[in-house]
Length: 125
Picture 1 (tube, rainbow, N blue to C red):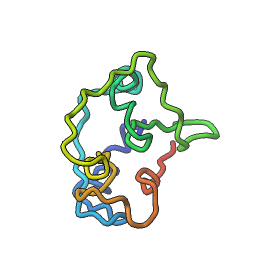
Picture 2 (picture 1 turned 90 degrees about the vertical axis):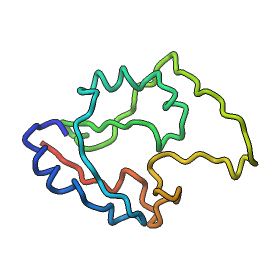
Picture 3 (picture 1 turned 135 degrees about the horizontal axis):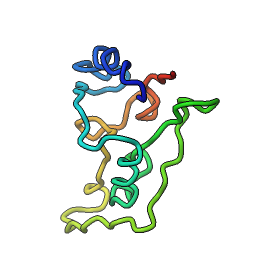
Picture 4 (picture 1 turned 30 degrees about the vertical axis):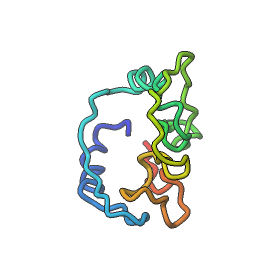
């Protein structure tokens, strides 16, 4: 979202609503972010251990203007990505699998075959 005038309609459309396209009871709650601005977000995440996670768990950006407006743009990877602290493995690898936040509260993948971010509307200027 790049136009401040879109905040109120976006908030009204999504805040407190369930994600109906997914088999989930999760409710969207919107709040102001601690980190503001694209450059600050890139700086914060590009060397984060989050960049070691599955691609669907990483931050994403979208082109905001031109013929590619609304399309996902590549996230600039850092050159000094932090490693995640290792946790002791208490069960078999299959039972100890970590799932990113795009899955449901029960750790289930979306049941309709839609990628986690593809259900969001595209906003253009």
